[in-house]
Image (cartoon, rainbow over all chains, first blue to last red; front, side, top):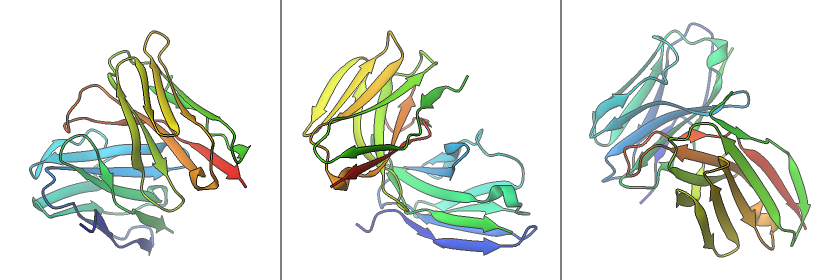
Length: 111
Length: 113
């Protein structure tokens, strides 16, 4: 298995632009998690899905952030409009049972 | 007070040293305790997990949980340069895959050859 796949790996955009991050979980996994990592705040859970249904989005910072999982093999995290304080590494992770497997992350820089 | 506190380091040790990494937490509802290792520019990977109090050993790694003190530790024996990474503790309130993990900020470890 190729593991969790995220795209793009790097994204540089200007304030106010829409950003879409993509994730392909490991085949057969029924949970999907979106995290954000910064030096100041560490690794924070934004939202997670079970069987494509959002279970807990209490970590989503504000309405500018939205996440979807239209099917078992694809999820998106969208930021609209983006702001400089959204600059971070965004990780997607998937799990079947115990272990969460993380993707390589998307490094987002908002200028 | 943050739910999980972890000294960010950095921690630099010579090859072969015993390394001790620690986290404290404030929420007594945490039942599952994990250590993740994150290499530079990579995603975290699960290293070890324990349930409730006690010790767990896996090769050169030992995880300890003291729920009475709300304190967890990871020991690395005979440390190697390949152990150089950021180590994050994580905790959850329930088991199975339907859990929310709360992470420490991570401790950056460098093992010098």
